[in-house]
Amino acid sequence: MNITQIKPQIRYVGVNDRTTTRFEALWSLPYGVSYNSYLVLGEKVALIDTVEESFGSRYLENIRRELGDRKVDYLIVNHMEPDHSSSVVALRRIYPDVQIVGNAKTLQMLGGYYGIDRGTIEVKEGQTLPLGGGLTLAFCMIPMVHWPETMATYCPELKTIFPGDAFGTFGALDGGITDSQLRLDHFWDEMRRYYACIVGKYGAPVQKALSKVGTLEIDTVCSTHGPVWQREIARVVEIYDKLSRYEGERGAVIAYGSMYGNTAQMAEEIARGLAEEGVCPIVVHNLSTADPSMVLRDVFKYDTLIVGSPTYNGELFPEVEALLSRIAARCVPQRNFAYFGSYTWAGAAVRRFAEFAERMKWQTPCTPVEMLQGYSHENCGNRCRTLARQIAEMMNK
Image (cartoon, rainbow, N blue to C red; front, side, top):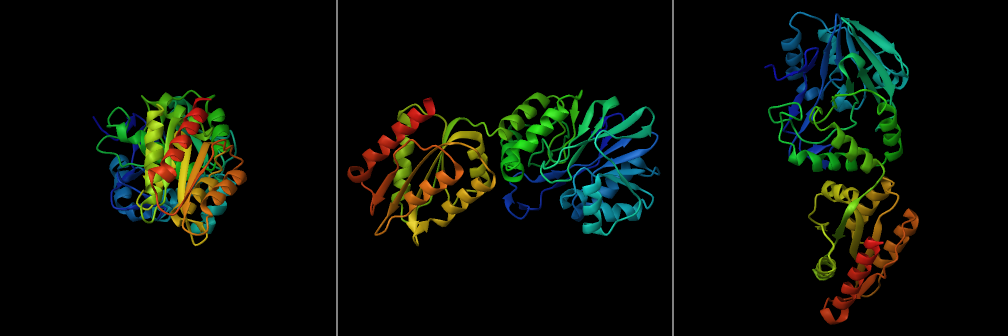
């Protein structure tokens, strides 16, 4: 069996990146990442997207191995982000006659990034490209998933969609390519983390895209990152649907900053109180050491967020402020929200949390806990337990 043969007329030619430590120079990659590219083989050959240019020689060898002496007739550019387009120049050196297919925004970006303004074909919503051999490609615009030029390419005869970054996930492909060939357990949280970090702001466009592609007959989803989905398409679509509606599962995320351990003790007391109230799961993140992408993943995954901070230079602790900024940038419309803070001589943290909730238009029925100076059960513990009870009641409404 040729492992790269997804279907007799579709071949995988992507690459794994187990070297890069930060995706977009921001987000950790504990399992690596794949850059996926595909060949569709009719009488003419269409290549769907390229890969990050540092893997260009390996990528071109993958193409040659599948095609031999055949040429690439069309390059379909679904998404112009450089991890998918930066091998275009090298590809054109090898296949100088290749026609580059994209929408108007794509072709403008192609000129801006790579100075390419010839040998291009502009396509619009619903247009098709015949490949011969009974195959056609149809084009579906899905703007802001997660760039404005993004489109999906659909092969109706093979019931296969190439949706760019949609339905993608962090994680390199360990040997296999399709979801029936791979161990999938870590990919589900990596999909949530990918969505929260990369796509999270664009819930409404994702919903529109889901409605649009939901009318198509699809048995294979060839995303630009992660496994090729066949067996688990329903689960993948369900996850993207829930995430793009900002629908969290029942569960509580406690995220806090603490300089000397006093605010941390408040967080532990609240967590213990939530557990006594039957709340599960509970995830606790010390923001000084937590991976920001893991925290964002959990904020998207669960329906309740509790944040705590000492007052720091008259503001929130910097890592707490950074989390709130990331959440606001992703336009999360609502979470069950509660907060707590501490100070030594001039309190500001609790006030800043209240201002954040007002800006986000989040409802906060719980009474915040504000602690003066050091933690003790007598001066703060009982109030933390009361806050935990209020949070549990809020979650049960």
